[in-house]
Image (tube, rainbow, N blue to C red; front, side, top):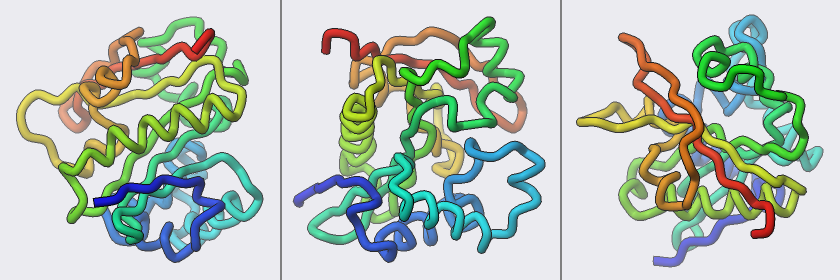
Length: 199
C-alpha cells in the first residue's frame, strides 16, 4: 500500500469530490463548518458550499490536503491559519477552554477536519494526514499548530470524529492545553497544541 499526500491544489477536483462528496458529513458540509458563522452556514446551499471550497482551492487558499492510497483518493484534512476559521472564537465551549486567547494570532494554524473514505479507515491515514498538515502549517509560517480532537471512550459514530481523535494528536506530540466539555449531543474534546518553534 502506497500513501501519498499533497495539497488539494495539486490534485484533480475529482479527488476532492471523491472524498468529501461521498463520506460522513462531507456531502452536506464541504468543510465549511468552521469557516462560516452559524447563520452563514445554514443559509448556504450544499451546491454553494461545494463551490466555495472549489473557489478557495482554485485561489490557492491553504484549505486542505488530499491523501491517496495506491493512486486512489482516500482522505482529506483541513488546515489553515486559525484566524480564518471564524466559528472558532464564536464557540462558547472553546472560549471557556481558552479564556483570553488572542484569536487573531496569524502564527497559529488549526487542523479542524478529517474525512477518510470508509474502505481506508484503520490504515493509519489519520496519522499520515496530521503529519502532513503540520508540515503544511510549518511551510506556511506557523509557529503553533492546534487541534480540537475528540477524547474517545468506548464506541463513537465515525461522523462525530471529524475533528480527529486525541490519541492520534498525542502520538504526533501535541500537548493538551484545554478541555472542551461534552454534552448530550457532543463528545468531550481536548484543545491540543504542537509548538514548531525551533523544530
